[in-house]
Length: 197
Image 1 (cartoon, helix red, strand yellow):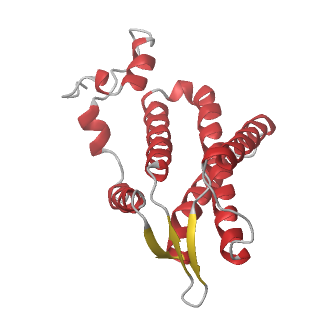
Image 2 (cartoon, helix red, strand yellow):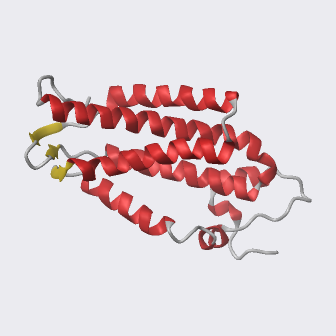
Image 3 (cartoon, rainbow, N blue to C red):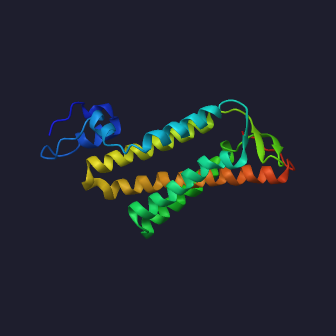
């Protein structure tokens, strides 16, 4: 079957398809990839990106609402390992190592900057930053690209599973540290500086 768009529109997919044997099934183009993306992905993506775009400016937001996106990515990262790959020792260690790296990176450059805490209303005021938008966009792009690559080249799923587990682990480690740091600042009432370097 010939698809209307060239696969070169997604460069990571194009690299794998270009290295495939000539006899391999022709890869779908961008239009086919987008049309086969589950419909629930688009409103969820719009919500996540709109929330992270709001984070570029100083804002006051409820604690529960603020923690929704980190919890979403943590659940996504854990379920991605358990449901897609099963619990193999190698993939589990890969996932765990990347979770530690994600937490380490968050501790260095990803900590939220708390400006004020209102415990009565369960709200916090955060400094604006482009970091949430960049990290969320990067993780979504990586997970989506890996999903497409697995669909296009099922014979490479074993190799791509390591990359997918790494992204899932990194996401969990990063967002778990971010959420814990935020909650610690909320409960501590600024007994220590909440500074993003």
